[in-house]
Figure 1 (cartoon, rainbow over the protein chains, first blue to last red):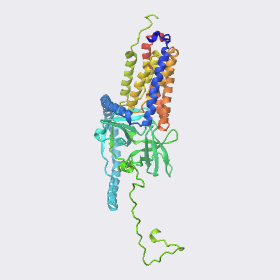
Figure 2: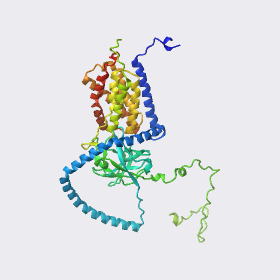
Figure 3: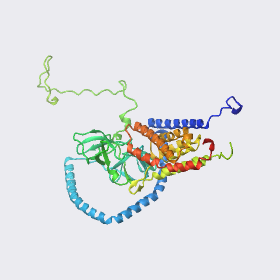
Figure 4: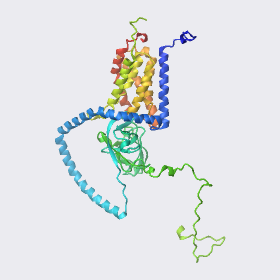
Length: 330
Length: 171
């Protein structure tokens, strides 16, 4: 029997209510995806595959779209340089004179450092390999600060790799496709980076909030902070190597200590991705957490207790008398 | 109902065209270019479309088109999946249920109502992301995006003017 001839045939729902029903269904789908994405982790499962696929498509597309803008930028920069060449030349000469003094100091220190290291047998960190990528897309909104660069897993990039510009740390790789990588900027609300304040030897967590200056949370320092204090990565947790330049301390409008990022000094068009292996990954995870733990039945027998050699001259301990402590135990 | 007052709306025309334009504009404004040394603004283009579609006529399709556009924004901007669909549907919902009232408003009053629903939508986004990241998202950054999005209203008004007389059943 056709529906129109049935008992509900006369019911004609308003189009507004039908639209409202569609709205509710779409809302439920959106909310379901949002909250399940939160639980599953940003790069795992179906959502991770969708993101990788989208990044793979968006990277070449936006590389093409951004090319004319890049040419325009370069053209404007060239004209600006030409116009300002005289004053820039004057400034650069003064800067070179100032820097030459520092160069001499730095060379002397370098020689001294090399000599002391050789004396003490210090093993310096090996150089970290890196790849250079070009930014093809950027998100600047309050809810996501990220960039898409045109190098990916095919060049050895993995999730968690630190990303630097000419001036300092930019963020870390949050997702990798074969030919593209998604960078989570330091300013993103979900970014957390352990940092070091060399002047005070303080530690903090650099916390992004969607603005241009991330805050210093969980600050632990003996001396009070000052405007202009340098901020470097501390290396705590092993995700970032220690000592990467991050920025300088500034006081925010809200009274919080914030960081003016070094990477803001120039547009982040080319970036260096450090192929840094997190030192926590050097030990095989399987060895750290074996699938089956040993029990009393399967555990190997404990090693025999070490035999203590008592000096023949010492008197035997008698019950009721204190035993003299050995010199090694003091 | 006379044939003169009912002109069937082609979904590809009133939904597909603006949706494609929003997607293209979002991609274009995501280019890492500088304008006089400043980065380009990042308005939420589909928010203007959501407002216009709710006023033009109630329909089953716009919520699902907004869902798709929202996921597109999430993937392009790299945010949590589902955030922008929720925000866009929050823009659409109040206007849909107040459509008969809102569609009678003049230009400035309509702009003001668009500003109100944009504020509602971005406030919802602020709450969702702040809870997820366990930190309060910078309000100044939200205000910048809000201002850029509210400035899109003339585009939404053009779309409304183009299709508002198409189907007089909903006037």
